[in-house]
Length: 119
Image (cartoon, rainbow, N blue to C red; front, top):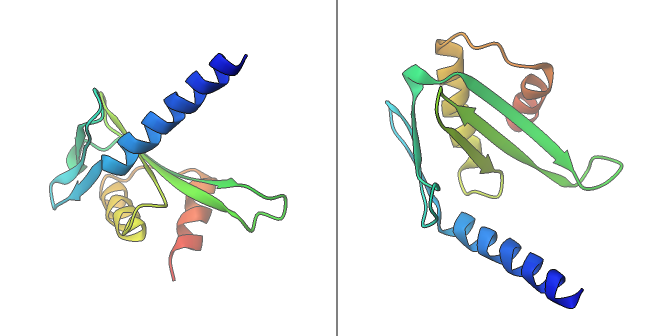
């Protein structure tokens, strides 16, 4: 039992380290995530964007604590970005503008979370 808990901890630790070492790059053509893990590098051109989803995960019943996660996808790749990233709001705004240009339909939760994130 202790061994299983240790393996689970190591997997979680490795995932956290990979996320911390992953860099997000934005430009006028798209977004890139570059990381050390196999499969951690991905690029999505704004012209190919098919999915914009902004989710909020609450850690408390009163919905005061929690984090957001942005999910972007094209036909082959998906990039997920957590709100603990410095500049998260800027990344979300760039992606939201690209989604608007592509006339992507956003779900109600994404729209509400986008409004909550904007000043």
